[in-house]
Length: 93
Image 1 (cartoon, rainbow, N blue to C red):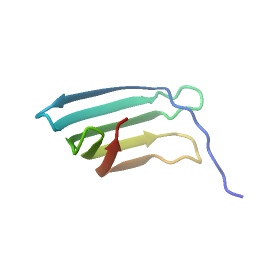
Image 2 (image 1 turned 30 degrees about the vertical axis):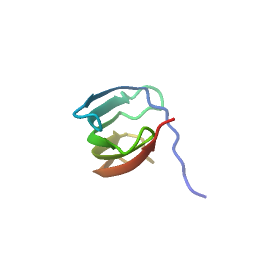
Image 3 (image 1 turned 90 degrees about the vertical axis):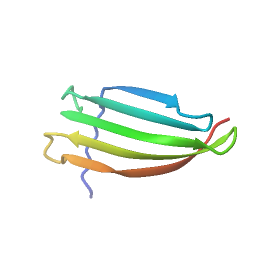
C-alpha cells in the first residue's frame, strides 16, 4: 500500500500581459501561498515569464520559462522544486 499525503494550499497570485505587436504579446505570472495553515504547505510559489504568437483569431503558440517550489515539514512530504522551459498551443473560443 502506498502512503499518500493530502493538502490544501491558500494561494494569491497575479498575471500581467501586454501586446508588443498585433500578433505578439508578453506575459508574466506568479503566485505564493501555503503559509502552514492547517494541512497547507509551509510555502508554495511559482513564477513564469513568456511570450505568445497569434497564428489566427483562435490559435496561438506560447513559450515561457517557469519555476515553482513547494516546501513542507510533513514527514511524508518532501520539499520539491521544478523549473524549465514550457511550450504550448492555445485555442480560444
